[in-house]
Length: 242
Image (cartoon, rainbow, N blue to C red; front, side, top):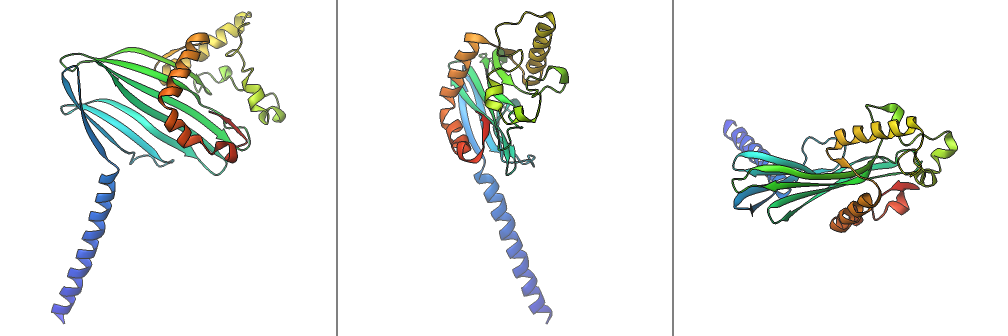
């Protein structure tokens, strides 16, 4: 009887081991490792599903020089439910002795309330011959609510009706999309908003032609990823910024 119980126990343990190994194998499948030589320095690039992201699908990339992690960049972060989605996409590009990181934010909502953040960013890091890293350029344009300055939020509908006209309201976003800022109070609010966004998203806020050129570059570089993750938004969401 004891021998039979031992046999059963052995079978159970083997089954549990197989399940654990299968789970580990599945995690490994979501992990990709690449090696890149930039300006003579060898970097290891590891992309993987974010194990700590409980809000929705997430994917990160970490870049190491030896054992030292020098970069961490979001490739995918999607937060939402049946009626809305906030999306962040990322991509990197090696250009000579530079690593360039691109980011894109978009939001969609069936009710027209959750439409931010929306925008794009480009960060350029120069790699020295000894592997040193230096941020040489960072530009962004982002529409978002700001936690630090609630009075500067660019999206402030006057009534419920405006909540359901976000595309029209988006075209006349307060202070941000107008070239006719004259009142000192308006200029002050715009500067506060820009300063808050620059601090939260790590870059220089750009407007006008510089903003248009940045958007064109980011959309061109990330066209496939943007199309993949927002291709059904017209059917799913009534309102969206993308």
